[in-house]
Length: 310
Ligand code: NAD
Ligand code: UDP
Ligand code: UDP
Image 1: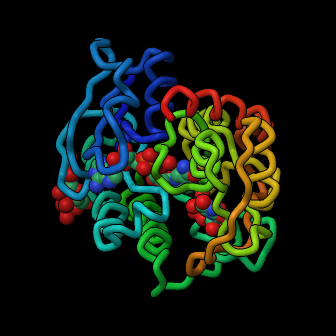
Image 2: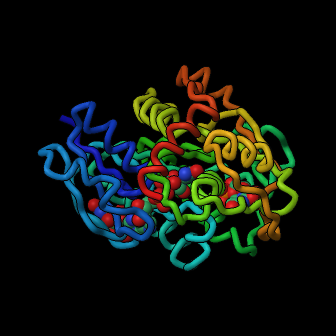
């Protein structure tokens, strides 16, 4: 039985990953400090003998014995990672150092949940892994972007210097059930606003684009990456190449919820990327992975979830 550590396991993506790992028969240690995650996300797993929950902050050393580590601990939504930006950088950097140190000691394979934010406000479109990005090092998003970039550096240096088995995954915008209703990300905001009959808040002119991946597709890509051959490190993009403006997303959410909500316009946050779409050729060729869930179908599932909690 494989012993698998999932840091950030009580978060949105982490909880879906824990579900899949438990289903596959792994022995799962879910670690979280509950900064943005919640026990309700993994409540249904508590009590299973193959699942263990541990409250811990990855900024502190951790001594456990495991075979594989999925390092997801880090707030992911702009409002949360900007609330305590110093802590965000510490989580990415000190967290990576501790988890890499742990992986080195126990000879575990370790996967890093990196992000499309390493490309910043990209001038190459769509973004291939070879693009080095256009990131502001001193802006309000830098704690997250530069923290994640530094974590990638640490992963590759532990790989080169200590021979660690690493996998670096660049996750593009992901959505689905268990997103926090107040985490400020666009999909959850729009759905919650539509269900409450409130105006949907479009930041800027709404012509900026994002590519949205349903969480089940993402977790499948994550598992395939972890299981990929020893020499394959990534970085690898995992996301859905379908690209939508925020106006198109808002119209789709209003239609699918049957809401009477209108749109309202608010200022664009600083350094908000204008466009984002993954080039997933590498994931297709090396992992035989591509997303299966269309935005409309994934939104229906997500709306059904939010109807139960809003
Ligand atoms: P989330 O906020 O729901 O989950 C993050 C989890 O990490 C939470 O449970 C939180 O409590 C925990 N955490 C935060 N700081 C911690 C610390 N210091 N020690 C221990 N636990 C800590 O976000 P998510 O969307 O599930 O994102 C998971 C990972 O995927 C993150 O690393 C994020 O950067 C990455 N990612 C997500 C997306 C996306 O669209 N969801 C996109 C790119 C990258
Ligand atoms: N570490 C950890 N668990 C372990 C081994 C190491 O949390 O099982 C931490 C340790 O506290 C250290 C970090 O990981 O701060 C990096 O470890 P490494 O061995 O690479 O560096 P060193 O201990 O030599 O500074
Ligand atoms: N956004 C928006 N209204 C909202 C929340 C976000 O128009 O209520 C926009 C935001 O400005 C950005 C896009 O939606 O251009 C995606 O934002 P999110 O915070 O979900 O993710 P990220 O910017 O990190 O990709």
